[in-house]
Amino acid sequence: MSAQRIPSLKLLMGFEAAARHGNFSRAADELCLSQSAISHQIQQLEEQVGQPLFRRVGRGVELTVAGEVLQRSVQRSVNTLRSGLGRISTYLDPGLVAMVAPALLLQGWLQPRLSQLLAAVPGLCPVLSSDESARYVDEIDVDIVISDRPVQQSNLAQLPLLKDEWVMVARADLAQCLDALPLQAHAQHTELLCLEEDLTSEPTAAIFREQLSGLRKRAIYDDRRLLLDGVLLGQGIACMSRLLADGGLRAGSLQVLAAYPRLPGNTWWLARVAGEARSPFVEQMFDWLVAQGQDD
Image (tube, rainbow, N blue to C red; front, side, top):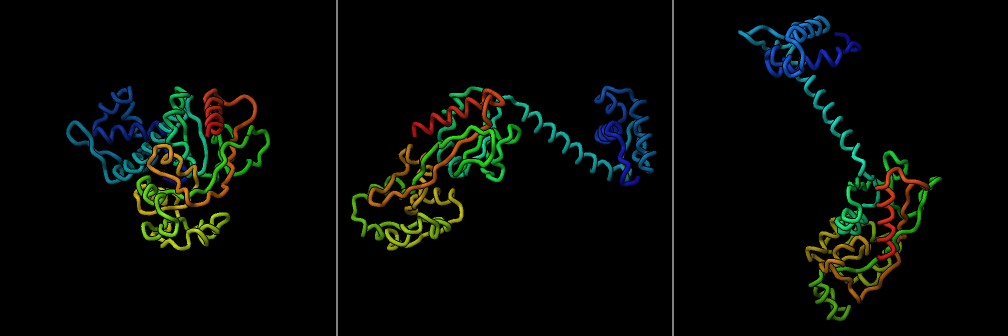
């Protein structure tokens, strides 16, 4: 069989069913065809590949070596097709709304509010992605974007959603202990967790050079989620986005340390296509996000 000539899907599906059942009659029943139709399809397929695919064994059939090779390829292809059709079916759900946002906002700010969102917008199924390279809003792949600056794209409705800040946080029990001590005594009771990029980036570099310089660094991470996990486990204190810590602060598991300064953080912008939204779910989710930002 030449590389350019691929048998029709009808022939391959008939072959796949016959190979799986080891019987033309049962394959015909599954595909709602006659046994002679299946036999004819197998004959056509064998002529196209130039190899016998089955041999008779009693009242059934078994694969030849060529048939086994083809079966493995066809099964992989059928599984890929079924998986793709399943994904298409999922994305036909009218309640799907795709939103792209930084991981720190999805984890720290939105995730703790997700139950509220779903209760406020029945039937909504948000598709939440932290892939910020896909921030172009096109009503096909991305419905809503949260970003650290206005999206440079025409025909968008966008507005500032949240004002962030940098705060020093600790697990609640550790924070209560430290708040009862003078700042200079903190180094005797805790250590510092930090994100590698925050050690040198503005505006956080200054606090590491000054107020935090006396603390021993317990761990340095390259992922904010690991930084948050470390604080929640009580392994030390950390300078982080208040919005990343928001869920823990609201739940009472985290506490802002009063002895340390708060530094200005990003303004996060919310955007969707201007005018009538693709679906009412997009508009309702957008409006809910705006309301949450106003309450924050």
